[in-house]
Image 1: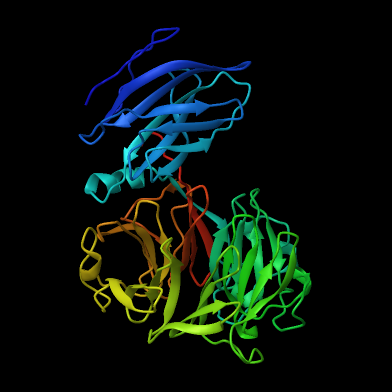
Image 2: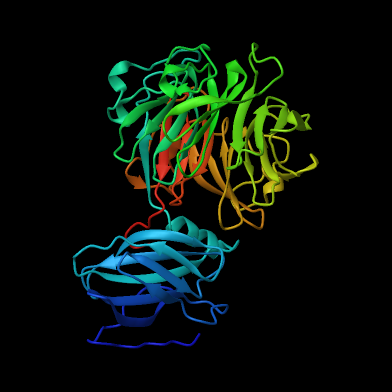
Length: 463
């Protein structure tokens, strides 16, 4: 690959990075702002015909580039000087060769550089992907109790540290664009919110299970009854699968809740086996799980069954095409369900054993597939309940183990503050849901003991 080195203003000794080549370094002035040095890097590969380059950067911190690797990850790194240690500031998935991000700009004399790596479905692509992630951490849950049907919520938790609050069989966790994490805390009959400072708040529900009105009313004045799933829009609008009230509720950005639709024709009886929810931003379409049925709702058509015959539905993910990735926990399969209701198996061999790390997904025994979330690489994350493992299935349908754990009643909670990828340690309990926030962080809802974990989309030093 052609190497292009340009110098401006002062000499810079070429940095040594295994697998990386310095392509360009220059000084950028924007109005009265001076950003003294960008070093742009790209992974050495035969497919890299053109070097990664910035196309614009302004004083607000808006940074754009071209010629990124696809599929890839573009990393912004910062340093106090060109020969000082570099730290990863943020990562962005690249699905096209052009992209942009927002960089925090302050008055310090800061050096920045960009680099791009390939995350295509190869062994090297997987290595690049896991090296783009860093610390495993707990963001909510103290692990006090695990008994089903019991609420461990206490008023003293309100507005306090989320990691000191006892959760009550949480079933789904998802974040808005600002980074607030919302939790469907089933047995405390509530939706909880973890703010960006790490404090926990009741977002919806009274913590007493029941039904006291459709709304609209303040969300914390209306009862929920075993909420089992939620969906969060980027703006912070939250939709709740209020399972035993057989309703889907909307909580708007002002904290007002009301019923969006009935999940069954007779909402006076529980939905039963409700799990997972997705609502289109314009509220013209919704999907939810109903034990052995995948249900569809539209304002005009009401609730109908899209696909039936599942053993026990876990979570699902709606792809941009409109098709769904669907986990069937007790059949040990993952399906792609098409918009006409037909389905094909894309992972699992129908048993709990076989295959293994690095093997085709269709040969693998997946013990209790439950959580699903698509990754911008073209692959997806798969979280197992009974097997208590987090897997990455790449675009070539090869499975890679990311986090190991222990199922059943075993209390497993390890690895906080450490690099997430260590398959020699059991770090998680039974999986409930997996999602990714707008920044690319991975959010896990796991364990009967109730923990919300996060894997940071930020490189560890040296990665």
